[in-house]
Structure formats: structure tokens, C-alpha cells
Length: 250
Image 1: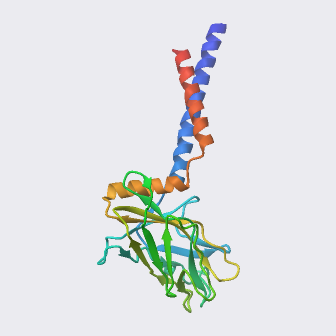
Image 2 (image 1 turned 120 degrees about the vertical axis):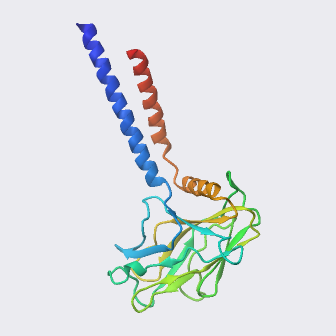
Image 3 (image 1 turned 90 degrees about the vertical axis):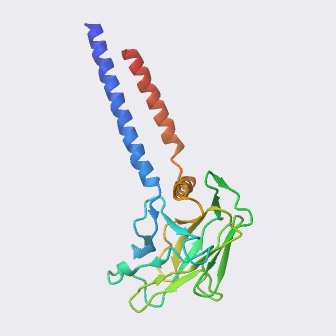
């Protein structure tokens, strides 16, 4: 009788552990999906929500937009992605007429060589804003913040009478070799009571095939939003425990 009860308990425990493992895999899949980048080839769309700037479709952790330095008439120059809030005009979530939209650069230039991240060397990206200012971002840049008073710096555009801002600014690659180049930014405004947006990334292709470039997009995201080590430690322990129970049941 005790042997039978023990066997039943072992089977129940084994089933329960398997269930836990399945749940954990599902949790990791969902968590990783939230942490994985959403690849965006379109403009960076935004609105003003709850006292802050919100990037449309942004994940809780990160969002990546894509550009291509070889997609236009002049190699090394692109004005994509642009910045656009057309969709939200008239919803009550628009900038006040005449208010500025700017960008903050929140770290150094990243370089993906097709296999791994490496030194960007002498490469840099010039960002030419609508105020005539050029921000040069290199591997040694710590940050480059917008200024809404003279001298105006990192200005994307000014809200129209209807609160609309749809603007493209130039990104210029200097001394860049084949690979992909990443920037971390946020949007900001001089409108009182509106906080900066969440961080987002722009990842520019410079001659990589699409497979290698998309691998770089994923790696760029993972370098910014790693899966918590404690989660993986728990996962490893649970898998080991399930394996032990299976061996005992056999």
C-alpha cells in the first residue's frame, strides 16, 4: 500500500514539475517576446499621453527603428526614419502649437560587423537638425541632449497650428565600413508638464545582407535589455529537478 501511494505521489510530483516547466517556458517565451525588438522600417510615430511622450507600438522595454545608409541616391546619407504624429492630431494628445520636439542621444555609437559588436573605430554619425545644428555621435560619445534656448540643438521640428509635427532630419555616416550602426535616443519637448519618451533605438544598415542585419537588430536589443540572470538560474534549476524526477520514475 505504501509502495502504491509512493508511486502515485511520484507521478503527481512529476506531472506537477512538468507543468511548472511548461509554465516557465511559456513565461520566458512571453517575457522574451516583450524584450525582443519590434523591427520598424516606418517613421517614428509618437503622441503625448499621460503627461509624457509615448512612442507608438513601443514595448515596455525597447523599440528599434531601422534605416539604411545605402537605400537612397547618396551613399552614407539617409533621412529615414522620420518623426510623425499625424495619426494623433485631433485626439487631444498633440503638442501645443509652436512647441518644439527634440531628441536626446543617450549613449555612444554602436557598431555591428555582421557577427558581433566591435569598435566603431573612427566612424561617426552626424545628425543634422532643423535648426542648422549638427550633432556628431561616435564611439566616445556619452550623451548629447537637446537644447530649447539659444543655441538651439537637436531640434526635430515645431508643432503646427493643429499640433502636427512630421519631419525628417538627415543622418550622415562618416568613415563607416560595412556593418550596422546603432543609436539610443529619446524624444523631448519644451512643453511644460510633458516628460521625455521611453528610450528607443535606430539601427542603420551599411551594406550588410538582410539576414546579418536583422541578426544585428536582435543583438542590439539584447545588449540593452538582457533577460534577467535570476530567471535563467531558476529555469536551469527547475529543468534539472524535472530530469531527476524522470530518472527516479523510470
